[in-house]
Image (cartoon, rainbow, N blue to C red):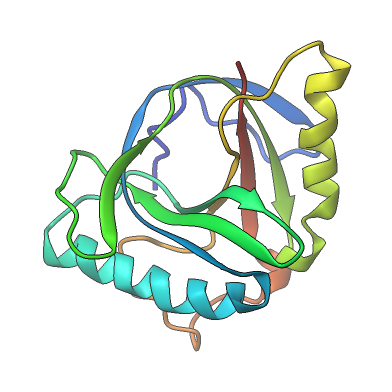
Length: 171
């Protein structure tokens, strides 16, 4: 699936890539939850979001994402979404919105999400090392989830193969 949110798709690498993002319309579900509930909330929200996309004929243009507006030890404000070709009205807990355009950095992680610390360390260190400031909230793009299909755990590849890209907008 093409990722229409960037001018170029960065290679799968251990480094940090500088990107120029285009604003991207999305449909998403935003909630403030207990961190301990994260897996369950994602397990409920992603299928609901994908069903809504299918119901309204919205064409996904990239991977499912999770954007953490805040992330504390106990509580997180998160947005689970999917980029769409054209803006579609939301309904109920599903809202229309957008991911920001402008400069950003990105890095890749392959493997289970409990090992994302290394990728976050790279993306958090880069702005300081290069004299830049972060912009709005970062997000994780899940390339191992096909937003055109309902999630079927029996056919899902194991977490050791999961490809996740972290994206951090810059000022």
